[in-house]
Length: 169
Image 1 (tube, rainbow, N blue to C red):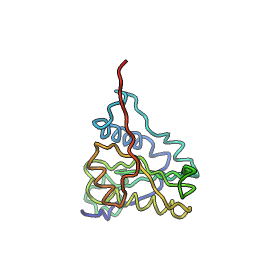
Image 2: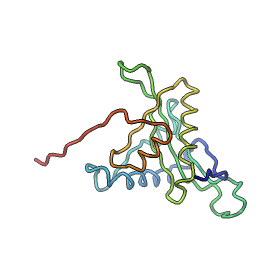
Image 3: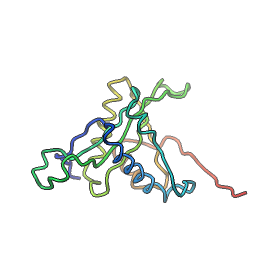
């Protein structure tokens, strides 16, 4: 796995919303084969403006940096990945009073397998840890084995399996 040196990580900004909306649809497309109950159109997972403005969340992006050595000048500043962490209260029966919920983990297809998702996760976990968070959770469809393997490689373990049944009445 080649770690991209010409990629910088920064907090998302309002100007990033059009690309973030495209990334959201990339997440929906990737998850659609694993989710029998997604609507055919109009799927919106995230309240992006709320994430951008929340004190309890950090939405970040990865972009190609100026140190691109001129290989592809028109792509300087191009957003290629994103993710967020949100500090949520934990259930009363959990040891930690709060946990970091990780979501919107997306890397543009041509940039996958280069360590960018790990960099985003590391940055999000650092942000949460600086705010006293020690437990992190995320959701992944049980059929999305490539994502499960990637998260396991980063130290995540299965914790709770949600089961669903579709009964046509």
